[in-house]
Length: 256
View 1 (cartoon, rainbow, N blue to C red):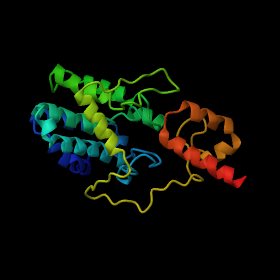
View 2: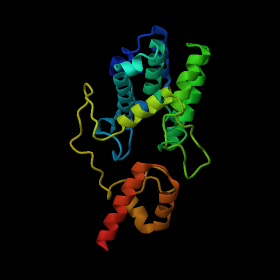
View 3: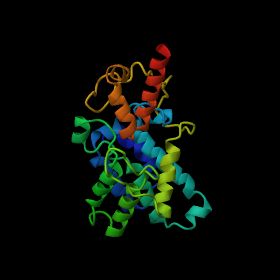
View 4: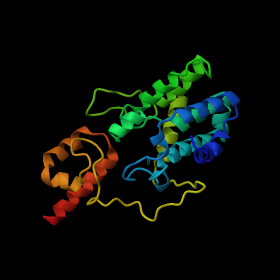
């Protein structure tokens, strides 16, 4: 973790009041794959606010999740029913929930798409620290809420993986914070971040980041291989890519 990266996350780390939990958060940040600091939370921006796009967008998204959690914790209906350590453990979960969004660094370099099972991958990473910095119950607390953060989007049409859904107040709270942090209409300020002039995706220029036609423009794929695009509509879970595909189909239809 570079000095600039430490400076970026320091305001969030400062909200963690338990010194041992804060230390654990630092260890996890040090061990994150490098791409987590550089990629955006969304490849198209269709379902995320502008601050979570582009260089460093995914990290800002994770920080935003903690900010929403902290808003919850300001309310008596939440803080009166949570211990200080529970709130700190939730902050760690929020800050690291997408810490394996494309798998390991090696996985990312091989294929940059979002892995549907990334909540489980990150939960497994957390469990590797069992007994090292926090006790078993607290490690499992963080891993459990991370594993359930996708909420109702728990099934993938192209695999047999079924993610666990939130089933307690902690996992529900993280899911809602993550959901709010992905709403385009809810913006946040980040020191040093300048919002790009435009985040509009040009369907004629969008390049598919995965699959056998990876690296090719989606509009060219649609024109040459419409059957493959039909397959994508029925088998992939990436809402942002499907949104661009819809734009491509409408454009091609209007040209006919």
